[in-house]
Structures are given as structure tokens and as C-alpha cells.
Length: 386
Image 1 (cartoon, rainbow, N blue to C red):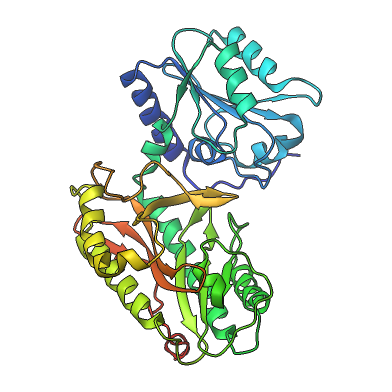
Image 2 (cartoon, rainbow, N blue to C red):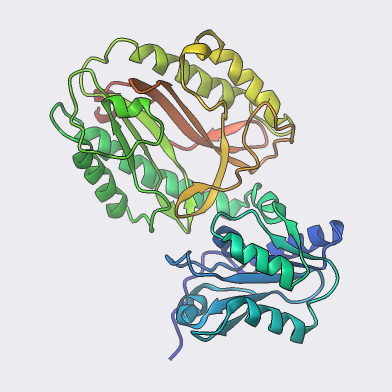
């Protein structure tokens, strides 16, 4: 009996990705690239599993057939998802790196310049060290992520579908906001809506920050109850075919507390500036500089990271950032291209007290930007429910 298939793209799309990667390897003088990054592996062969902790490898020669290496217990997921390459599995108790090195040697791939993808936070220091040593490799990062920046038409459609799921989750969270409710109850509403609208497993659970927690970046839920005037910060993303479309909204249960509307207004203006400025051919730094001018009047009093957007697309736990080397920041002078997808995380905070802000996920088009959410950027709950 064969394992049912769960494939999100045509074989020709995976083939195109591999061809472009092999062209990049040739251009960089690399004979073989080994990656352990779940997002990169998914991009190259479609492999999807909730287990992103156990080691796995894809080896891509500059001239030849790529190979996927995996623990035998995970073979079922490989049989259901992997497209365009052979899967080879090691048995329990076998050293994965020794298995990889021996197989690459047998295939004649262990020669020339070998790049080891060192850009993944899923790859342990010990694994990287051993790969570099036993394959006589050299640190190489960003080659696959650079290819992932520009999304195909099919990829863009999955991002749009994820955005619709995201909107449902955010709207449910907003509807649950009321004085006296706590962040767990609001998070429950968001999570339930994501599942109801058929989100796949999340890279990051819904972030719900009530009151002072909205002023402390990346605060978890803690049972904080909504008080009159409190901001409720919401950030989440639905998932479709592992593609994400994150969204931030800040909403008050009643009249916003003092200072909150000012932050919201600046955040909204900054989002609008980026949406109006970004287009093919402009540099990331020019977009960031334009956005920074909007925040200049309040920059000294707010907590903000000065990173105006980051790429999103394929994501696995613990986050949905696709390429942390390509922020829209004043230091990134790379060119923006049509088909890139960015999340604009424009939440502004008075540190440890309160915060307000909004975000959008957008697709760069041939003429500008397409924002994907249909929800308002407003502090007022009723604006979402009318």
C-alpha cells in the first residue's frame, strides 16, 4: 500500500527551484551544498513535518541529482510530501553525520568545494562543526534564502490564502476583548478561529499582550485581565502550505488610555509610508529611510527595533521570519524585486507601560504593493465588528 501524497506545487516548480540553486552554486564556485534548515528543505523538495528538531539533510551538487537524508522513523512524511529527489534513511542508532559522509563519498559527491549551510537556528553548533570537519566544508549561508525572497505566482496565492485565515483569527480575538477578560480567553478565541478556518500547524502561537505587557516586546500571556483603557496587542498568522501572512493589531476595550492614540497614529502613518514607497528597483535602505522620517518626532521616547519589515513565506516553529538577513533597514542596500513578500512590524512602545501599533503583510507587485489584510488599522473594537 502506498502512502497518500500531500503535495502543494507541481513537480516543475520544484525542478525550477533546484535549477536556480544549482546555477547559484556554479556562480559561487561551490560543488556541493548541504543544508539542514527545515524551511530550505521544504522549499527544495516539499518536505513538511511537525518534527523539525531531529536532524535531516539535503545535499545538492552543482551538477547531479540532489539527495534527501532522513531518520527512518520519518520516512512516512517523506513518502507523502517529497518531490523531485531521492530519499535515503538511516536506522535508529546510526550516526547521521557518518551516514551522510559515507553516502556522499559512495556517490562521488564528497569532492571539490563543499558548502555547509550555517544559517539555520535549527542546526546545532556540534552538527555544524562536525559537517565542516568531516566534509572539509566551508561555512555558506543565504544562497537558498536569497532564492526564496521572490515568490512564484503559486507561492503568492498561498500567502493570500494564509492572510484570509489570519484575518479570521485576529477578528475573533478582537471580538473576544472585554473589560475583565484575560489574555488566555482572548488567545483561545484567536486559536479556535485559526483552526476553524483550517490553518495548518502554527510556526508561532497567537501573541496576546494586555495592558503593560503590550509595552514589553515579545511578552507571553500571563493571565492579565483587561482594564478600562488598556491596549490589547494581537499578533498571529494563519498557515497554508507552510506559507504565512502575519498581522498585528492593537485594540482597546473602550476609550484608549492617554498616549495610546498617538502611538497608533504614528504606526499607521509609518505603515502607509512603506506601502506607498516600496516598489521594484528601490533599495531596502531607501524604504527604511522614508519610514524612519515618519517616526523621527517620537523616536527618542519609544521602544522600537528600527527594522521596518522582514521577508515571510515558508515558516516552521519557532517563527515565521523567512530571511533574517534581509530586513528593511537603513543598512540593507539590496534592491527590492517584484514577488517579494514582507511583514511590516510597526508596533511602537513606551517601554514596560503600554504599546500600540499595526502591521501589514504585503506582496511587492510590478507597480507597488498589494496589502493582504482586509481588517482596519484602528484602536476601536467596533470598527472590526461592523
